[in-house]
Image 1 (cartoon, rainbow, N blue to C red):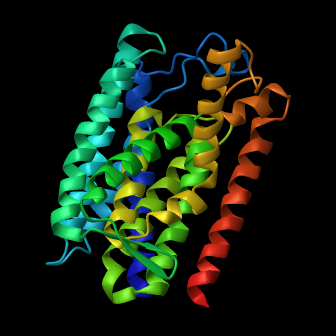
Image 2 (image 1 turned 90 degrees about the vertical axis):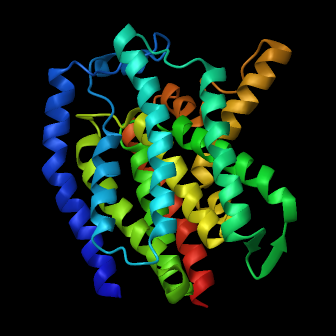
Length: 318
């Protein structure tokens, strides 16, 4: 079984290495490039960098996991269907930005409607097929009908948090890689027979992400775009729902949480006082405005994620 985890990771990485140059070339040829917001002055040199690079790890992970799916693969296929759904929503957002040559894609209400619509479908699937309980360390909480709003809120919050974290070269990709890889390891060591197929899925996704990061670290040759960030949020959420480990999103995804919370605080405080707590939100842009190089910020974010994820892994090993 461990061999299969390694194999699916390697197959995904190999597929990613094969398709990545093609996707980058195609995006450049079609001028699918990122438009930088005018107030993010430190990123002006990134104007014109290809986007929609999330297609690299989405396709790589999907085609690699197909090799290992058996009769019990229906739930995994549903997970990837949801991932594709969020990727499509992000793709529409990216496409509008590229087409209009500006950094405004779907209107906020359109994004929310799309995200909530998908999350309602997921919530009903979870309610009727997975169950109404969630795990909180050694406790099992039965939410009953409240599982439906819980799933909706978790999906919307997670996808938007990952999306907000995608602001520096290698940031969202690096943090997501660590999170998903450790999540897969936790599934493998905690309940191998029950969650083995989801551990495989995580290793497949991590393999694709690793290859994407080779092209996304500073200076990035391609951005993941909303296509990638929303897909990651959808995938992370689905893995948590299927294995009843939603609480790990809060702990292991602490840097996603900080991105979202810092942005919310900034907006609410500014509306009330017309002043800003942070020089720029989300939090990583605040550090950037403090003249901390983005590479250092990315390393710190990844390091914290590794530390927290290691503690969670240690908990399951003891």
